[in-house]
Amino acid sequence: MSAFPQPELDQRLAAILAISQKMNSQRDLSALLDLIAREATSLLDCERASIFLLDRERNELWSKVALGSEEILRFDARRGIAGNTALTGNTINVRDAYSDPRFYTAIDDRTGYRTRNVLAVAVRNQHGDILGAFEALNKRSGVFGARDEESLAALASHAAVAIETAQLIGELRRNQDELTQQNAHLWREVENRYASHGIIGTGQRIQQIVRLVERIRDSVVNVLITGESGTGKELAAKALHYNSPRARKPFIALNCAALPETLLESELFGIEKGVATGVNSRVGQFQKADGGTLFLDEIGDLSLTAQAKILRVLQERVLERVGGRGPIAVDVRLLAATNKDLEAEIAKGTFREDLYYRIKVIHLHMPPLREIREEIPLLSNHFLKEYCRETGRGDMEFAPVVLRKLVSAPWPGNVRQLRNEVMRLAACARLNVIDEEDLWEGIPSPGRDQPATQPVRLQSLKKAVAEMEQRMIAEALQETRSNQQQAARLLGLSRQGLINKMKRYSIGG
Ligand SMILES: Nc1ncnc2c1ncn2[C@@H]1O[C@H](COP(=O)(O)OP(=O)(O)OP(=O)(O)O)[C@@H](O)[C@H]1O
Ligand SMILES: [Mg+2]
Image (cartoon, rainbow, N blue to C red; front, top):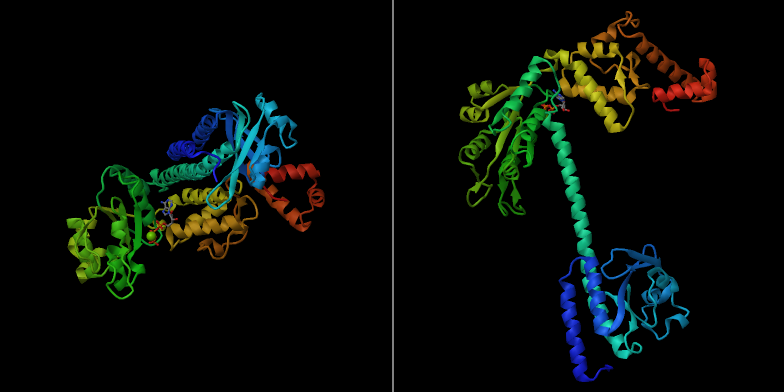
């Protein structure tokens, strides 16, 4: 039974409904808390009202200090009348606050307000979980009665829905902001990596490639990239894409040699649902690259049927899915790579000449490493830096003898092989200067057969001494099982002197 006579009840209900509508359109939690407080004050004809929300992780209640303020009041949830309500779910109506032992006077002290009487009800969501407490202070005339209790409880249940929605939206917004930030950061990373091409080399052959990438950066012509395995074809394709007007659209790479003929077409063009039993529809790589770039690696391995279809996409800018019901428009820039001699394939009848000219508007040839040996020191140092950056290891460098050996090795696997070898050397190196002893039999080094004693190296005395010091320190540490005191004695150093040197050379104790 309600404590209200019928007409008054109708009036109150109507007021609560109106408030509830207002609350549901407020999505910002802080503004919502203000709104609820303001409406409750006028509905209950009291001086103040506030919602205390329960922070379960810290077992604290928090609330805004005052209407319109962003300052937050936090206190132990086991304290005060609001805390009692939030933990027990009970409604508490206190006529004289200062004579009630549950009353927490510190809040009045903090806010400078003088509480006379208090009404607190629990704020529960639809599952009955308590979100906090709703508190009204100082009824303007007299004390809070049963009608006020009912009204505040009704308001609290509407408030709970609005609060949960606002909290969820706030969380989604924060997540979205975080993702947007991360995304922008990743874009900068990708752009930094490829905008300066990522193509390393100061010699004429590589510089020609770099200049070409720059020259065609505003156009979206199709480019054929040729070269042996591991010469940087994919790197060049990415440089072309990330330096083009399509940089922020997808770059999709597909290796034509990796897929059997039967799967390749559906992979490229997509497939319609139900072409065969159990087949779901799938978007093809061409469509995924729409607006961006499709990089077809090993294009020389495409079947004649697939070649004909690709030609159609390039000519008419439409494609047809396997089992499709009609053409789909796409706008794709094609970059293709191969290590085959396509002109020989044309002569054999295994590659279409018309497709060849379509994809080879511009031809980029990546030279094998043996033809650009002058780049090996630069490339090796570049990969070594990359290793140090990625692993967080201190700066490392190559002893000149190692660089000389790297330059003269045959490198059948080209730049990729060089990169792998540098990574391996860096990972296995005992000191920060990679020296001859770190070279491994696996390195395709003609220097392997050379006598162990090398001619006097052409390098600065300072560097030679540094190398010698590092080696001696490492040996002493090994011999003494990392006992710094003993190692220092062996080396004729004080312990602190040894520690200083280990720091300088980033040698771990
Ligand atoms: N000029 C260069 N500057 C910097 N890095 C390079 C250069 N050339 C190649 N690389 C690196 O060598 C590795 C192999 O390059 P990439 O994968 O582009 O070669 P690929 O020609 O596509 O090889 P494959 O034919 O085997 O697919 C990559 O790590 C790439 O970054
Ligand atoms: Mg490749």
